[in-house]
Image (tube, rainbow, N blue to C red; front, side, top):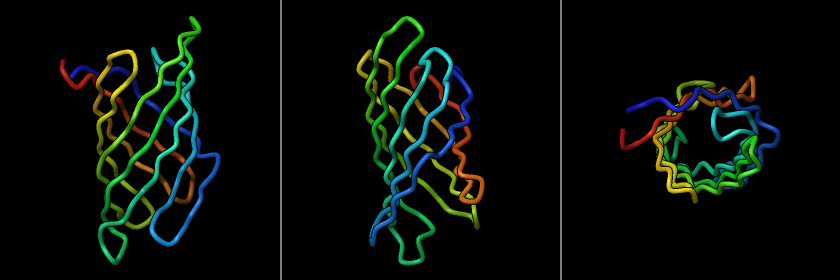
Length: 118
């Protein structure tokens, strides 16, 4: 797969309820420009070590193009880190694969996004 960009999201808010955790974040991500992202982590195990996620993104490029995307994937927690792998489907036709690590202490979401079909 061809890498589109590395990313380093800053988590601006974390909301927790009984069955899920929602992360709101933002970063500059290559050709997508400024990206605003909200991901909800859903636990699939009683010890909250594995699960799925759903999310939505909005981007604004330097040329003023607004792109919306739906996100979905899997996650696994190891101590204070959550590792995630997922697929993104964007309104401009892009379909991407992403891998990232969420640091629960530093409140960062760091990883890379790839063209899923290259």
